[in-house]
Figure 1 (cartoon, each protein chain N blue to C red):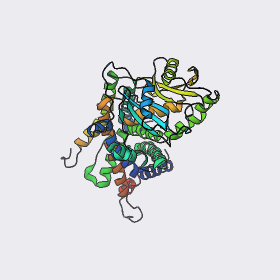
Figure 2 (cartoon, chains in turn red, brown; figure 1 turned 90 degrees about the vertical axis):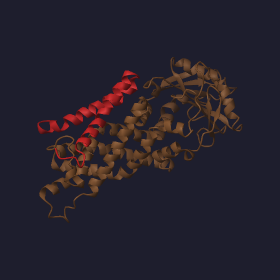
Figure 3 (tube, rainbow over the protein chains, first blue to last red; figure 1 turned 120 degrees about the vertical axis):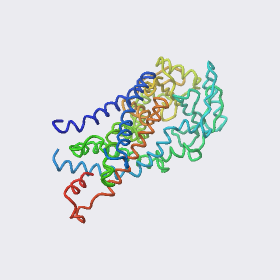
Figure 4 (tube, one colour; figure 1 turned 60 degrees about the vertical axis):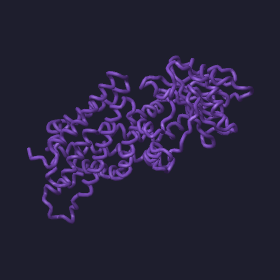
Amino acid sequence: MSGGMSGVWRIPAALAVLSAVGLSAAILGDGIWDWLCWATLSVPLAVCAVKLWRQRPGRPAM
Amino acid sequence: MTPASLRGWRLVHRWTSLICSANLLILCVTGLILVFHHEIQHLMGEDLDSSYTEGQARLPLQTLVDIAQKADPALVPKLLSFDAEDKAVSYIYLGKPEESGFDLGRWVVLNGFTGANQMLKQPEETLVGFLLKLHVDLFTGFAGQMFVGVMGLLFVVSTVSGLVVYGPFMKKLAFGILRFGRGTRIGNIDLHNLFGVATLVWAFVVGLTGAILSFSPLITGYWQKTELAAMTARHPEPMTGPAVPIDRVAAAGLAAFPGKDLAFIAYPGNEYAGSRHFSVIVRGHTELTQRLLSVALVDAETGVVAEAAGTPWYMTVLMLSGPFHFGDYGGLPLQIIWALFTIVTGVVTVTGFVVWLKRPRARSLSDRTASGAKLGSKA
């Protein structure tokens, strides 16, 4: 992907990689693998929550 | 991408999503609750008795079979099944002597340590059973299950096509922009795009594994009719004498795969076994290897392993689809994460539907501004 498109994909690609790592981690073992899974899979959810909170309806325009 | 192919992808995204959206909402709502099925069963007092004291020995399999047969002395044991997570829970299928399938008999659930008999309630009688039935087949049996599987495949196509149309749409927009002040349609588009792209990998994996699980009767049936049938066909000898004790059969099967646990034992005459051979199916005991099955054919008259083999890749795919659909492989935190992803997916479904409802009708609204018409073609 070239030029203008790469910016569009930077964050989605990072979230996709984190999701894939997280989904795979906990099946490979327990303990540290579970923690890796919880930490990485929380990132896409946190991104959704933070974006929504910061731009929630009724909030004064930035 | 050419404008024509982008238009094609938008059509694919619109229609695959629309067709599966109603079913997807049912799956999200029921799935959201089913993620916590263990906890709910416990609260409702519907969980199976899996209590035993540390160090207690398992009862011999023959003892369990004898207890089970008291439930219906006219039936004979056909299949034993052992829970991978709840070590104490053993399922025993009793069938008519001539039966090879699983239609005419009954399942008995026993605590493998105490022998306590547990009534298996009809799915409609318990909350979890009701939700599971709604989730899996919409109360319409095999046909419904295949329908839900096809809906799952449409959902997978919808996630992929959604990703394809996301790029061109977001070209001039910052990631995660939410323009709630710009009307219902634009607010919903932005929320749909952010939540959809952020959770895309999870939704793809859960959708695909759900579809695979829906088709599990076909996948298991194919294995049984091809590889397993070929295996048992190589040992066609009929039964002439009495069978060796079931515990000797289990020990012989386990000895063929050191370090594995019992998963299933099918008696001779069952569709998963030979005419005079037991099938002893074993699995590992880590999160990963408990999904990898191997099978040993044990001669019922000699107690000797006649043949041992792994299972083909598609059975491993099917078995591995379970954890990646249920989210039950990383403790309670992963269950909560699974539930949150399910809620986000529900929001993506609803906002996508609203975007479609609020689509501008290009012909009747010919006086729309150029930018409005351009946006209208995006979903």
